[in-house]
Image (tube, rainbow over all chains, first blue to last red; front, side, top):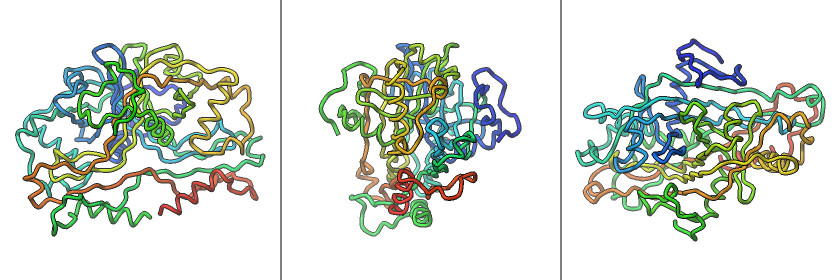
Length: 225
Length: 225
């Protein structure tokens, strides 16, 4: 699981437990962010307590991109330079061991730390396009461009991919010999995120066909069932 | 979306934006936690910065249950009474609007705040059983009981369900009239977590059949495909 070291050796990203599950492979980190595109962003509110919120995440080279309403209080806190922690997690399976204690998950778990910068101008627009196309590949090319009013209502954040840790576990149950010799079953139940057939909006005008970007979900949904 | 008010009116759980999406229905909160059983836990590390980690969550009446290794640093911080924020999120669909700006998600998003207590004795054992049976209903009855050594290696936390907010959006795209009159498609791509057919461990002894608890996943996986 351990690849080339691109992860600076800092205390808060050094994995101290289950170290065999830690990875310093940046390509695996990038692939996880690109695949999951949802994260949980933690910060310290102005009142001093921790807050965690779900966010859409995309990636542009060396930065994780996020966006939100200009009017949101949390967005102002983070745009102002507050330290953040961003978790991006994929649950890949339930590890069904021969005891509750050894039962666990197959997972990929990234945690990033740092401070965000606010993107403006062409960088901001490119980042919004990237976020849209992360969720629905190719969708941007099917849509009108954002208006100045829409851009003004949106704040776009970039978190440098500099300080991070990655834990990956894709293991089988690791039961002690006395449990393996017993009568309990062991294995893995695979998990994934799946998509259903797209539903058209009730107010869709007649004659507008499902676009290529959305049809791709329909086809992959059918192929995987 | 708004039900009976069981959510104390505190500043940090008062939803200030998109308030029509806020819910104070405790039954919806409970159902979300029970269904998703994964959360993201935020706290302030001893060094003063925020940290977010993925955690397994279960529920026992008025508490969210979590567990971890006695040896984990974060566990000691939280067991020591640090304030936490716990996010439990379900992504239910991609809202494909006629502009990038109006595109969004169908989701259910809970954020809880508080301090955890550490469970001991019979409460601790019952909480671990609850966590196991949350992920794999009925599994506890198929397994040997935890050993004293296993219990000593595990810390179990209970977060009171007292201070929380819940946002639910299950909407269609809400495009302005000029976009509805245009040529862009709009709709929703449903999302869910799905399970694949269970895989038996390479070291499973011959003659041990898949138990009822695991077969239920197999059957639901087939039924939904």
